[in-house]
Each structure stands twice: as C-alpha cells, then as structure tokens.
Length: 304
Image 1 (cartoon, rainbow, N blue to C red):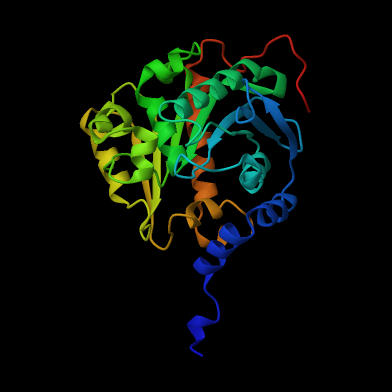
Image 2 (image 1 turned 135 degrees about the vertical axis):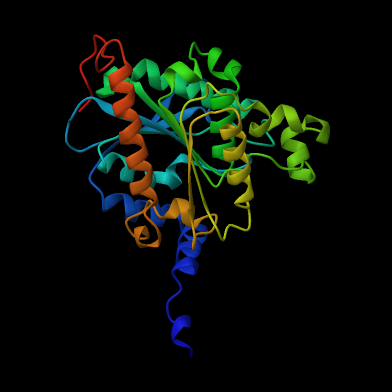
C-alpha cells in the first residue's frame, strides 16, 4: 500500500463530519473549556432557538459571534456545531449558534428573516452574557455565509429588528459562501423561486460601500462552492471601495474549512486563528470608535 494512502486527513474530516457529526461535535467540544446554555427561544417555533457558548473564565468586554451553519438552505442543526461554539468560547468570545427555518417548510427570505431576528435577540441580550454589544460579528459557512452576506449588504433585513449593518455589525466572516449562482436545480428553484429571482436573492447583487468589514475565506479545493464565489464577491466589494480581506487555503475543501475549528482537525489549516485575529482586530476598532468607550452594558448582571 502506498505510504500516502495510510493517512488522508481530508478524508478523515469528511468521514467525521458526514458519518458521525454529533459524536464528533461532542468529543471536540469536550476538549475545549467553555460553558453552554442550550435551546433558548429567540422567536416562535422549533426552528427559532439558539445555543449560547461562554468562555470558562469571565472577562469583559467580550466580542460576540453569531454563527450561521450551512446545509443548502434545507438542513442543519445547531447541536452539530458544538465544536465550533466551544472553539470560539475557548478563545474568549461569546458565541451564538441559532437554528433557522429551512426548505421545504420555508423559502427565501424566511431564513434571512430568522437570522436577522437572532441577531436582534443577541444585541438585546449582550449585557446579560457579559458581552459588548458594539462588538457584534456575524459568521456563516456555505448557505450560512450566503445569509450572513445578505444581512451585511441589504439593509432592510436588519432594519426589521432595529439594527443597521454598517452601524451595528463590527464585521462579517464568510466561509466558502455561494454569493452568486444559477437557480438551475429543483432544490434551488424550491428555495429561491424561478431563475428570474437571481438578482433579488444573491449577495453580489446587493454590494454596498457602507457594508461592515468582511473576511471572506475559502478552500482552493472546494468543489461544491467554488472559490470563484469568494474572488468575485471580494472584487465587487473592492470595486465600490468597501473593506474586505480574503484568505484562500490551498488544501481545504468545503467541509474541511469548518471542520478545522475542531481541535481534532485544526492541523488542516489555521482557520480558527485567522477568524479570531480578524475578530480581535475589528473589535479594537469598534471599541475605539464607540462613543460609549466600551461595553454596552445594561442593568443585568452577567451570566458567568
């Protein structure tokens, strides 16, 4: 047997995520210090609930990261991503992972509206969890990156919950996101409607200069959502003189880029460290520009 056949890390991560997602998530989460408060309602219905991940040690003001998972807008569960919530909490962030409505029970724009509602809840509850509401970040993978970027560019979604993407989001992270694509399959037509809806439903058509700072990252070997999505969206943002950073990981595919947040697979690429560096840098900017000079704290005692 060839030596290279004995150890294939990309196959290992694919198998761990695809075949035993909950077990892999639980094991990885237990390796990282954190606290989890599960299944909090942010709206009505079983798909409008979220999990909160807090650092084991209290330190303030914490930055907040709301993470939107992928699943082709038709599947997914917050419990699968315990490893990611734990990874962010272990780095000192407050992590929020919501479920959201999916196809076929819901169609565009229901999942965008749910994500906006989860962000509104997060901003309202920031002080309760010892976080700084001025350091609010949004991160998504795959379909979740599509939703996150729609919220970043098209202001009406966050306006519906009293937020403004430019003023209230300190940054947005998109991982392996589909930012422009043809509505050419039964699934996509079911989710987004007829092909004529392309401009209405895709982030690249809504790029504005006053969007929050963006970090767009992808794997060069991603065959499901090709790296051209990231290159093209970054080019569109730069064309209007917006703020965007890009990272292209040479050996990562579509699942590996999110699996690398797990301590079991962090050797694949420094994705978690790169995201943490972006969050920390933009948090410092948010703190310096905030008129309040620090944490947006309310009358609540922090949950620690």
